[in-house]
Amino acid sequence: MYARALFDLALASDAVDEIGSGLVAIQDAVSANPTLADALADVSLPAEKKAAILQELFAGIAPEALAIALVSLERNGAQSLGSLVSDFDKISAAERNIVVAEVTTATPLTDAVRASLQEKLSANVGKPVALRERVDASLIGGIRINIAGRVLDGSIAKQLSSLRAALTNSSLGGEA
Image (cartoon, rainbow, N blue to C red; front, side, top):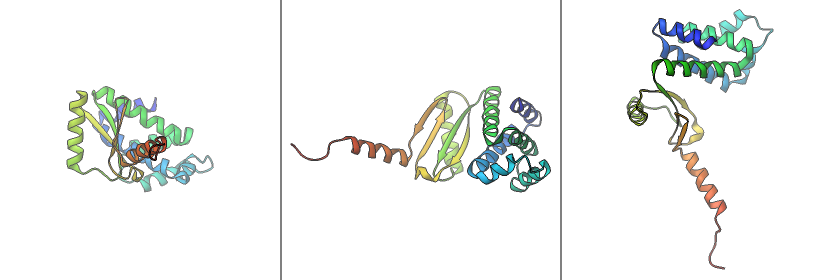
């Protein structure tokens, strides 16, 4: 319900990408900081104070994204915000005939790598691709892509995990 209304507003103001990115930034910050999530879900904290916290932390984010995120957090906490972001992305992709690829890397993508990745993924799925980027240092290096229900994991962490599993499951040693 909120996601559809927010998308319609974003579309009317030609700010779909800006609002979508803002929602993701808020969700990432709330997910990474349980203290922030608890404060924003705290019923004893006045809504004005919560709004002030969000505005201070996310000064550059679209006000529409801030307002809807705050309502979502107040109603059902961080889980509700995650559903809002997911629903907004789905509506946005469907309405604009775009495939969303969640791309996770150990360090931020450069503009050149981002453009190349977007071009190759678009050619692969036959539709324009929008990237939702996340940085996760635990990948060590490489990239993990979640697109159209498939996960392509080329991270060093995954390779090490696969190697560890292969070594654990193989018999080591010489002839018996």
